[in-house]
Image (cartoon, rainbow, N blue to C red; front, side):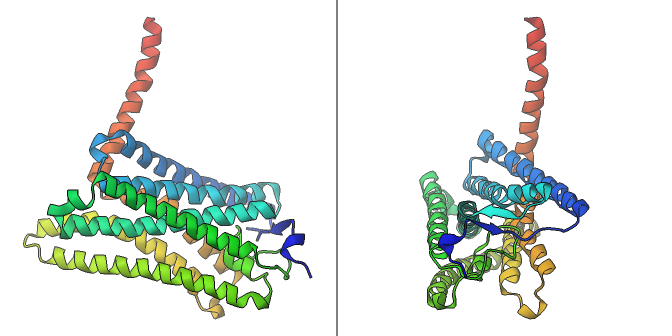
Length: 320
């Protein structure tokens, strides 16, 4: 029997046993992470450089892209390292840091998605008050509140998890450090402590979910009262990307954590964990850019500017 003070490292779940499959997983993770870095990086650059994109919706989208980058950079590099070097080890402090930063970014993303639903609600249901309710200071305060809430939630969970005595070994059934799998290593007498923090998080998540549902009920009822079909289509097109990202985020996470134990298996758990922790950061930029003409225009303008600078600099040097 061991406890948390005697554990110097944890053993992560290997993605595969065969060397060829390990390299295949490395290439897959490399492709997904590069897609996430490129997509979110382009969105951040386009919003930061495009003055016509300095609106509340794109300000929150920029923050969402930052959380996506944080999520992908917290879990994927260690998994890629383990696949290349055929190892499972992560240090105790490294595991604690991974838990904190993953919870920080994933919580901040959920809170930002909640704030973005309020942005869509005000835009469609109260357009005349949009500038008043969502001024630059109000947007900055809401984004700061989302980041601060994510930080406090991560700090609370990380401190609670790693203060528990661990007496069931150090092998985790996940490819990255995740709280439910760490809690499986803890002693049974800490049940009340684990239950209390879970209830707090559940109420917080449920409150955000109820707020999101209420916002979209109001949005849909307002849109359906628009007399012109073109107006309805335009209103729906501004909400569909956010709704798609929100659905992907919530459905994958809920199914992963609340699925029946009868259908649980290591391969299914691994697939679901990749689905909710790795795939959304790569897909979110694509979802937001598909139907948003303003964002497409900003990206085209950014590409054109970079291309012109690339052509101009060598010519300038030659003339000099």
